[in-house]
Length: 102
Image 1 (tube, rainbow, N blue to C red):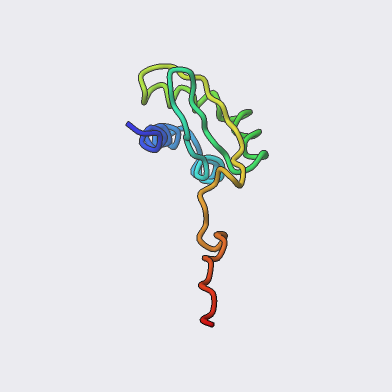
Image 2 (cartoon, rainbow, N blue to C red):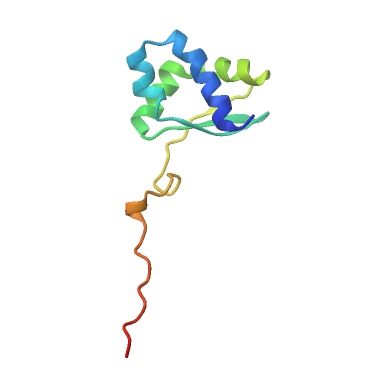
């Protein structure tokens, strides 16, 4: 089971415990980027979201991930940096152009 599948299954458990607006606001834009016996890494988009998830939802997220995996893994919640984010086509540098003919 890959990280995306684990996180989707955990999100389904969390969706049952949370108000729809809370779920959409705080968990929709998160990504489970790593899972191992050493821990799970749930990346957020902003430091505000990170602080709020740490304070309000960590106690629900860890057990949801544990239920999916069958073992406990401590949760780390970093903020995504621009370098971590998937590249957007419009943000790519333009392709080099061929020099004009002589």
